[in-house]
Length: 75
Image (cartoon, rainbow, N blue to C red; front, top):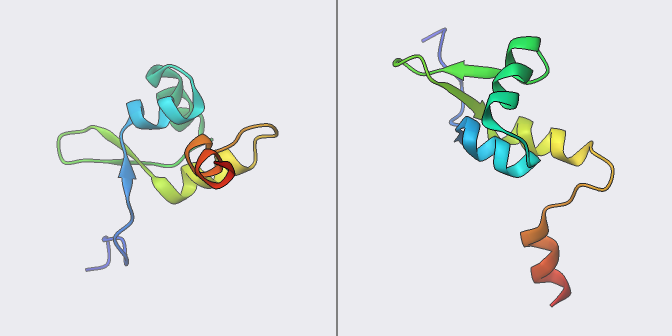
């Protein structure tokens, strides 16, 4: 099918993305509307975000880190 994503990618809800960036979920929606973040719409009209893209954006933020991974590595 031409309209489908070729490989299954993990999708995140606005609340999950917001928690990673420490912002309000409405901010995540605004980023999607502004084109800063790609969103996928579910059949019910809800937005979902590709986890790989979100992680990439998190890596581009200076001083931002994935606390779970680094805490496990240092302890």
